[in-house]
Image (cartoon, rainbow, N blue to C red):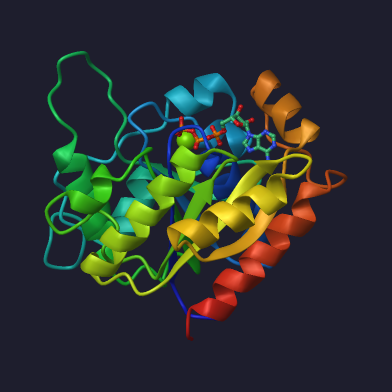
Length: 253
Ligand SMILES: Nc1ncnc2c1ncn2[C@@H]1O[C@H](COP(=O)(O)OP(=O)(O)OP(=O)(O)O)[C@@H](O)[C@H]1O
Ligand SMILES: [Mg+2]
């Protein structure tokens, strides 16, 4: 496996980016790896999917905007992890990058610059795998330099809607322009004949579909209660393990 593997999880709003980010992160922890999950949502809730309660989620310190990470920057990798990294009950360390704390506080460009700088650094001293749960849409790929320009691979999540697959197609085009070499597109929340739907739509729109994750009552229930998914039992874990294997295979060591 590539040391310091960096994964960006992207897609249209509500398709399941946070769910899949948290489950992938837990899957890599289950393999004995040190995993960092970066929440780049201005309304962050990844930490709740990793087992923190609301109070602990609200207390996560937010990375300063426009921070240049690295030996010659404002803050070294160790200082960054020690100051802003928060351990979660499932063993993943979470960083919160873009939380909006104050109305009218201005744009989040500086937060995106921080994430870009973080991913540009050699993180492998502290993290075997870094997973960035991205805010919805594709704007992060258009910002100067691209927030995820240093990611090794993008996981593009889609739900059974044509719009989410159109978003995936646009994402692949922008990722190619940015020089992000690898994208994998995964269908989520599939019911009945949705596997066929994903196959047909992705084929038409030129999106390379690598797998389909079913709609899971256990995922919906965990989210309804604001807690993490149980570690064993739900059949969705098999799909997540296969996705994790595929990511490791696709990124050369
Ligand atoms: N495989 C699944 N089965 C059932 N429900 C799911 C599945 N994946 C995600 N969901 C549900 O879909 C909703 C949106 O999921 P999630 O928050 O992960 O999406 P998101 O893409 O991160 O959203 P946002 O764009 O707001 O960040 C949640 O209620 C979640 O429980
Ligand atoms: Mg989300």
